[in-house]
Length: 328
Image 1 (cartoon, rainbow, N blue to C red):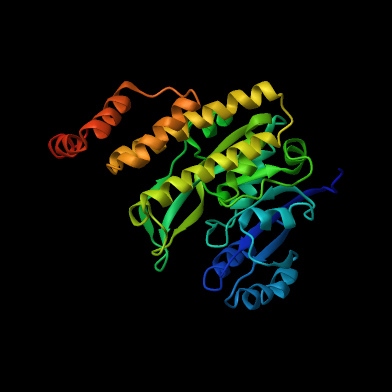
Image 2 (tube, helix red, strand yellow):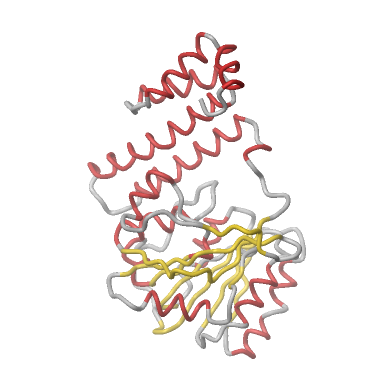
């Protein structure tokens, strides 16, 4: 499928759900950019607040700046679905997909991303560091988003799942057309970044800008692992398995390679699930996950196997050891 590409144009796709109080920061940060060619599509994912009114109030502001802002609506279907609604419509040579609550830090943030992405023909995408800020004060929280090694970004995401937050990335449209030829990602129940990043990282190199060009909002009501039950945390991990499996299935690679990559994902996430069950002293869940790992023929470290066996046979002993040796 052929998609029109306008040279030099940057296309920004933003899913928005109940972003009435937050999206103005992102829209304002785009308006302040010194880059001259920008189009933006905001997909309202069934918001129940006044997100639509806020977004539409910026249409003329964008036009006056020489930019284009388009508002689309869909029934609540998730971020990946919102990306799928807009991705076939954008015409930019460069494409970014920030969430509605994050924003560009400097007036030249997009210029620097484009410059870095254009520096080498074999680059498919580029990413920037990010600064975490408080939701209300917008003051830095004293810690920045850090990345792993980019030498093999594809392998890194299979073994750690870490691919940062969407606003940190910008990709070439030509790379997206190669990695995601129908411009449709797996429409799962988790955020969209793995589905975008994994195919791009398989086919293309990813460069690091080397400085923080974006700010990432930390919400006070964000779900944390400490607030979730073990069942919810396990379901989150199962969700990531589904994303990886379906994303790999959609890639144009041999079944042999797909199976090998899927096994890498099962090994990483499966062991994370077992460690979680052990840390929560949940014998029943640990036994179920352990059986899964054996069925998947996934290796378990000697330490985790020993701790699992103690939990299975002497659960009280494991709790006692945890109190004495905090890092057992």
